[in-house]
Length: 184
Length: 222
Image 1 (tube, chains in turn red, cyan):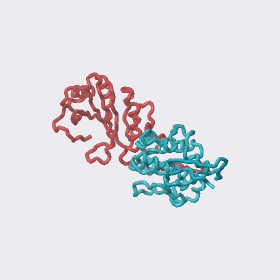
Image 2: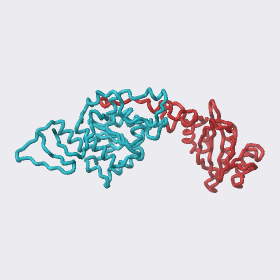
Image 3: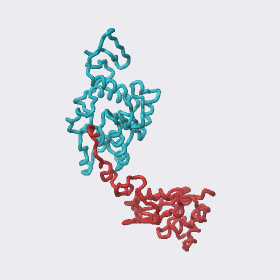
Image 4: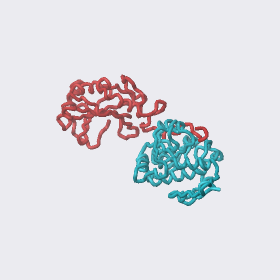
């Protein structure tokens, strides 16, 4: 993911030492060089970009390192973004509820079958969030115990937060039988 | 025939001789009873619902017009006030609730969203409940003032008095939809082919049911 807004050009490491300890710990757990994972920051949001194949291991490490709460799990469709290298971005916002430290882990997925591994075994709270991302963007989470739609009806076809989904839908809002007065 | 009873809907004076009587039609009496005892069910899904609450509260006091008995069971109601936007997930629920209401029953589409989808021209929001339900009175506004809802109840009382019926025979001649249009006009092919299949579902008719000032003096019965 290219991340340019408000990013200091030379910032290879996080300015916040509490967050940098987490990030370098992740790099040690993954067996990569310190500073090799892309870090981006905006104000007090510190984001660590990890490729999809390693993100599960990194998240498990962060859980062991004290990030005991999954604040949010959300997806973004970057279709049409000129600088985007991947179509979907997925963000995990983690918090250490003792120290208040927060870190955002970002990864990505791509067509034709966007797929990530579920983090349900790490944070039970990811259950409905992954269902929502699946419902709205169609990103599947392998290992999720019950990956169904959560907001839209079961019979809904398509994933409406995808950028190539028409704003007015594909006729979902019109496919009902009108009730006339003499038959209701 | 008939006897001057209602004075502007505000004061009522009944003067009959000792052994007098009134001759009228049974329908007229039934409609007169019905219109002054509407039992609303507020299908409130958005900010219009707050205005419905205000209308029922003491300041605006819809009890002055005999419609204060809000019930949240459709089986006890005869007036559905659809207040707010209806999404495609909710519409089957709305239709089911409408069918659970006993006859005779009426429907007020309150506000821009219920009448036309309002600003929510998106995949999930139904573009006017009158595509799928019979609507008697539309209220413009976003949200409408309580006074507008009261006016709609008065309009509906007028309509009940004139046409209250069980089988909607007065709607049979309808050939075109008469509800508000959706805000957007540049609809694509897929949307143009889904106009209501049965135009009798929309019920407002300026031709057959001229608006009458509900505060004008009139007689009960003719």
